[in-house]
Image (tube, rainbow over all chains, first blue to last red; front, side):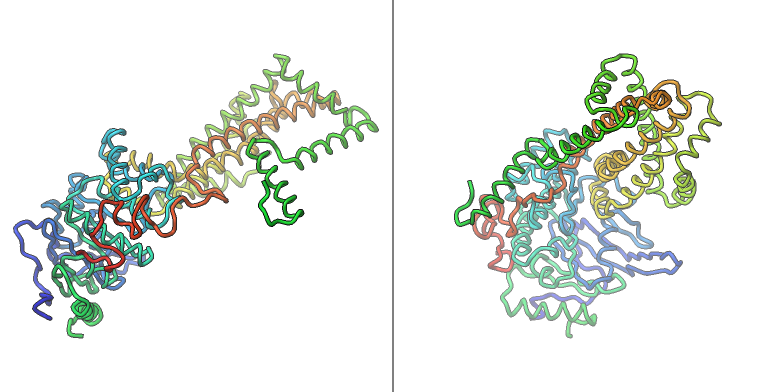
Length: 270
Length: 313
């Protein structure tokens, strides 16, 4: 089984590729609390994601997944080390990455005062795209995601899954190079989440996007990722697993056991 | 039509309810409201018949006086001046208070600086502000404007601050992640402003009543034109019909503005669920016009479904 999983006990950097789109190099991130205490969220994070790859980041709560996510988004700056997205620093070159990164959040995060199509068009509006063009684009993506006829519905009029579809449509309407997902399907019921996961992966592959999917669910990470990076606190990659195209139940169970072992003890042999 | 299988009593109840809903949907007041108002009018007529005119004049006299008030250009001018004073003061308080509230919402330091002043301003009774305004300002219009500003400012400021802080951080992060071109302006236009509008409309409704009362006191105390001044004259001559007519004119103004605010509210807050609004989306999240597992309609058939655990095929 171990040859199938290509399990690598870290470090150093995982994937070496000529076409690396995202790269964390020895990244540390420390927060200072209100009472002056230092909390290290990331310590020596090394991770790279190649173009067209879909990497799932899995780890327990508080292991630094969301901090890494916010660094990628450019919402925080790294304390030490380098974060690079398409060769740019997402924090310092925030504007330059406009339209190149988009996020699918947990629960869709729709603006309640905007209709479905207005929510989808939000990113395009920020980019200065004309109203007719952005609404056309929004309707096109809503149709593609099975929400034709719901364009003028407000978020409260949509089910959780539909809201998440709108969130996905908003993300793809921007036509970004990189798609980030933060626990995107964890608030949904199991069947809806399964269905949306499949649709999402298909879209990412069809559109040739690069994806980073953050989750605390091992099952979800194994289902979605071409590669699974297992995070342990304080924010570093403890192990990586490359997922082959198809897994039978026994292989899936074995991999699940190994990932759980790394998450719990830092060792895949657990 | 009543549903089959219901008892007569249930049918009667259902019919009454349907009529009430129909009336309400046509914008008519419910029957019991009309009956209550009619009862009040009858009571007025009975009591007025047994009392002096300077205590309670007959209803029709007051109604005629109200009509006269709006027909006569001189008296109408008094009414218009008061309305203008109220609106000018509240609009100024709205802008100043909203800007102050947003600044406090955004910056804790600014909040620490401004908050004690606003709390002191709020703690000063309206009547004390009237005295202060009379002593500080010679010009009547400035006095009234200042008075309204001081009385209504804090309501807008506190509402703006609280509603700004109540906008979920997650929504701001989401908007920020889309990297708005004109960062602050776009964020304000698409997130902040719609987020604070509901509370500001509430503040408008509260301040409208408050502002009207305060202007009346100010005009009563030291103006030579306006509803408050007219009320003072009517009171000096013991003309109760005049007092009631001028009071009614103020009520009419407040009701008109409240109706306008309601219409604005209905337009701007149409995204909020009403009590009986059904969810358009169904719980199972089937995309529109789709196959049972929902994948086909989205153009993603055969990719991954609930049946295969969402894995790629």
